[in-house]
Amino acid sequence: MRMTMKFSRPVLAAGAGLLALLLAFLPAAVFAQQAGETAANAPTRNMPPPPPSLPISFGDLIQVTVFDATELSGTVRVNSKGEVVLPLGGAVKVKGLTAADAGAAIAAKLKESGILLEPHVTVLILEYQTQGVTVTGEVRAPGVYPLLANRTVLDMIAIAGGLNENAGKVATVFHRDSPGDVRQVRLNVSVQTSGSATESSVEVLPGDTISVSRSGVVYILGDVGRPGGFLVEHNDRLSVLEALALAQGTNQTASLGSTRLMRKTDEGRLEIDLDLKKILKGEGSDLLMADGDILYVPISNKKVYGLRALEAMIGVGTQVTIYKTGR
Image (cartoon, rainbow, N blue to C red):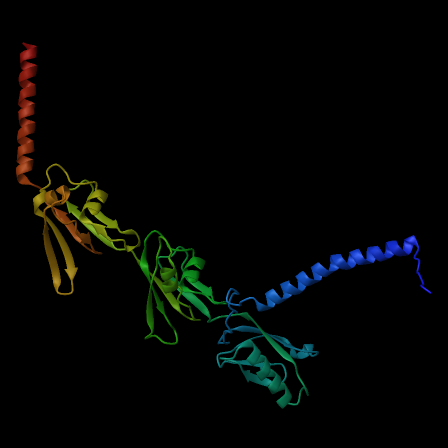
């Protein structure tokens, strides 16, 4: 005998609703599981590096918190001996320790003194006195800046307001703990490339000093439109013609063929004879000027006499014309 089961319409509707709910939930659950696996397997190289565990030093202000013992907690400053003096237990040496190590040292001191059986101590460094980085030289806001995270030379220069208009392309890094280890970082102030970014991303350590160099100066003297010293921004090398353009060019009476370039070298003063006529015509090489170079453009006596004679002739002719017109 065959048995048949009959369901009422409300039961069938409830079953259909439950099936639809399960079908809707399953893709979301699968997607969440896949997302969790993707996040777990994601590479960690894109994550920012953790901040450095800076050691405690003289003058630092730390906050000591002892669990369930407010009378033992408080804010203390590290003295000249590198110690902190607790309300109970005496002095504890913390110089050179990280915050976690200092907490363990204070807990061991409290346990050794019999003040607490199982002390739980946490240490928070509120103020660093000697962990700053000094940024000097040609930056907009020189000063001492705290180092509370992983920083590079470019980071510290940016914190100091960036380079000013007189800055050169070299920053020198002096390490406090190793004075003989001096590094020079070349700053690329135009377009950053992967190579230049890697070269200038030198890590800075607590107590370091960063000094940004000043741009070079070239001097243009003699028979030019505006003689004087000209700052070469960011130590870009200027050619002779570019330097003359800054000095508003030569005058009419300049002796272009007798120009001299004077340069200081380790062996002494070096003088180079230049012929601006050939350089302007493209027949001579346009030399690059270095920091401290002096370009001297002398005056031509022949041109001066010729110009005066021409002016005199023009004056005489003008007087004759006026005399004839008056008659």
